[in-house]
Length: 142
Image (cartoon, rainbow, N blue to C red):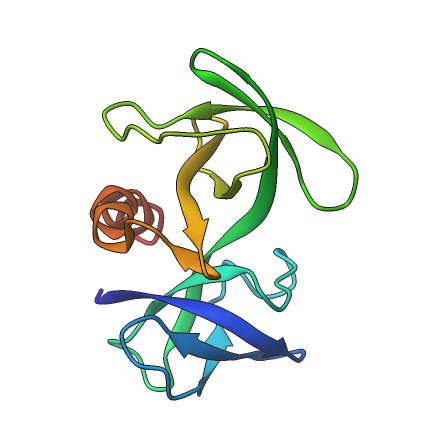
């Protein structure tokens, strides 16, 4: 499985038009069987795509959220729909967070985590994020 990160531009029933982070040329990607009809993906969210498939498959999704409170290793975020949620930070992946920062959030089986900050609509530390999440995604898809 070869994973890349991308920002969602638009979606339809079978997949999304996305902009891979390493290439600003939009491409079409289809939903994997674990995403199809299970996970709602929307524009401006971030996804991981498996580029070993043709067409590429969307295999993971991150939500955008805004930091509304900080308490040591617990971050309270607004999911952009007015729902506050307590989430954790990823161990060994320090983020310098402030109130109103935007973060990429997803669930990993360990609860929901703030996995990176957002800078100009993209992850601030994309290589570090991909290195952290790749083994988790690969295990789920085995």
